[in-house]
Image 1 (cartoon, rainbow, N blue to C red):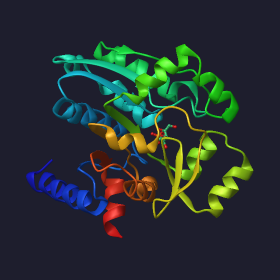
Image 2: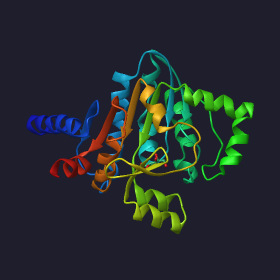
Image 3: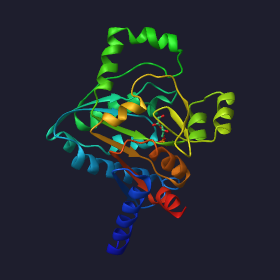
Length: 257
Ligand code: F6P
């Protein structure tokens, strides 16, 4: 890449960070809607941001699922654990995702890549409130839920609302409700409209949106022009210490508006 291109991207990243009102943005070239390589570049960028930003010593890292998180996990290396002891935990339960995309799989993969520990949480998200309450009183489950609560770092994806609802095979009635309420994005099991109002959330288990504010570092990774509105809306409810890694596909769309 020419210096001009790099500088241009750097300036747009600063502009994006101001528009979104978060700590920092990094923009990688390309549009991940069109090329798998861009997803890989976002993963590599996540590794280098984490190398710089993760505190030294012990950290408990809560992670979400999704294909972007899988790519982030694949690009992690042992360099991350040079001065650090990491434990990876899923931020929430399964959320109806395919097994390979679930937070449990991502946290296990991140632990494998970095030579760290991980813990799993086996609770489907589509479970009744009553069942959650009784599961939470089980010591094995409450132990891992405490660990998730005490995490100091979170790494997560952001999705387009209807695409996510369909991927999780949510009911047609619920999908219609999401459309009626003009949901544009989803993160952590929370669906929100373009003003950042939460219009629906999956049953409460694991990390909650309000817990994020207390984390030392929050890394969001999401790209592709189809996610532009979701990213922009999520930024309205994101904690200020959020660092966003995105691509030109999403960034150009947001900055064009
Ligand atoms: O279901 C987990 C999750 O992280 C969602 O919260 C998010 O919307 C989605 O995955 C992102 O998925 P992908 O990276 O595949 O677009």
